[in-house]
Length: 62
Image (cartoon, rainbow, N blue to C red; front, top):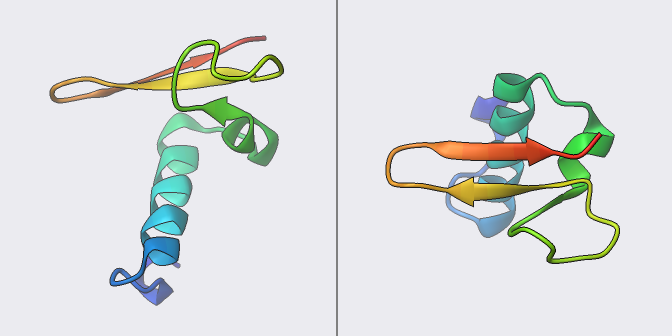
C-alpha cells in the first residue's frame, strides 16, 4: 500500500505518514484524525504529537 503513494507530492507524504503512524501505534482512524500538532492546539483534540530529536511521542486522551 505504501508503494502506491506518490512520495513526490505533499499529499503522498501526508498519506504515508498517517499510514505509518497508524500502523506503528496501532491507532484507529478516529484517533489519527483527532491528533493535534501540539498540546492544547484545539479544544476538542483527542491527543497530540511531539517531535523530539530521534523519536516521536504520541499522547492520546482517553
